[in-house]
Image (cartoon, rainbow, N blue to C red):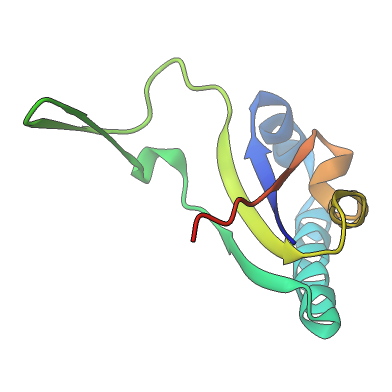
Length: 119
């Protein structure tokens, strides 16, 4: 079964990031590279990407025949999706155990959610 591990950015995570030394930031990034390599080595990686800052996002809505596109972010946005991993695991407990090894899980929550097969 596929699970998505969602990594969120919020005021707490940004505060922690700003307080890290250059070496700690390097280790954080290396931990993500090592995690990705582990997923490749075990055959569990389906997809993984970091996302650009929210100020590069576009928000799209449609009402009737009118499409409204707004550049992000809205002022009230305090938390946003920063990246994700899609993994193949036997159970949600296995996916949760993987998520617990991410460096982000030490600073805030990391979300694990089953991926629905819509085909």
